[in-house]
Image (cartoon, rainbow, N blue to C red; front, side, top):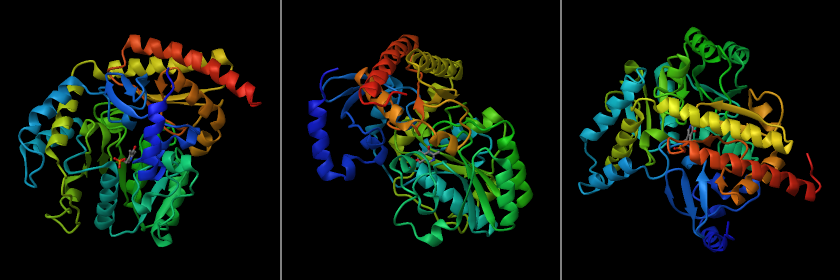
Length: 439
Ligand SMILES: *Cc1c(COP(=O)(O)O)cnc(C)c1O
């Protein structure tokens, strides 16, 4: 690893242009007290920085890169399409092709609308839920993130948690008050809230596998419980599958756990690394969206042709036989590598994993909700993060983010990661001891 001098220079310049030098706050590495390398390119499981250092990439652009960096088939398809035009503001066949692929993977998506981000998808799904039910309140879970729309920035996990903000400045109190918050993985808490606000809750929105407080899988029966309670109380059930869609199974968490929501939000993988979001679900609900119905929602670049092409190429690759078995194996190998490294270094760890999505929490004992996640040793995590960077492994810069492996992370790369994590954990323990913080 050479010194990251050029990265440092460029990041300085960026800081004069952008708050924190970044286009999205987590990228600033503040939660791990570090400084991000400035990236120049990626290929397969690797990314290279401005100083020529190569890293195994476990950030995966925070979710979209399920095929790894610059997958040749996706890049070729987009390049070919670009000759034909960037945007038309008119329908293309591409939207129907990708839409049909989404519905084929997720039968609950009877009808849908393309937008440009997961934030927009969640924001629009909630507007629709309120219109459809004539109710104002929404119930979300402590530590779940659904994008940065005003009413959803309430106890919203990773980015927000990481920065230690209670929610966000600039969100009107009245707006935040229309969002109720309950503990994740606790059906009783939801039941209590729905009883208390009887007839007022439009929707329960949930990450069916939480991934923005670090990965927290749903407890057995939890999603079924939400399905049952929302039905009984006349509230809609919204699965925010922006991370889990096409990740934990082709049909997302709704397939993996066999629970059918009323509305679904997608993003990340469905755009194959380009900006795409989708919301959709029951036809009777989606027919309330303009121009068929009175719920307004629009977007100049919605259904962006090159983004649709990237999505189509990505989902085509995911349809190949054995895809999700391979992702499962890669995830299991990374999990084993973490356990081995932490155990060898004498550090506690709880690894939560669903397929190719995992978080090693630096603590003992189960992590079932946001309070459990927050009891992790954040200082040790930060030290580990820096040590991994030195050993050529790029981790998401927060204890409250998921680590991602892709189809490009084959056995050789994962073996490389195993050795690197082992060295990094040793390095971290030495660094902690040197600064008087031995675990
Ligand atoms: C990333 C994410 C979002 C927001 O998507 P953006 O494209 O960043 O706006 C929403 N919900 C979940 C579960 C996410 O992980």
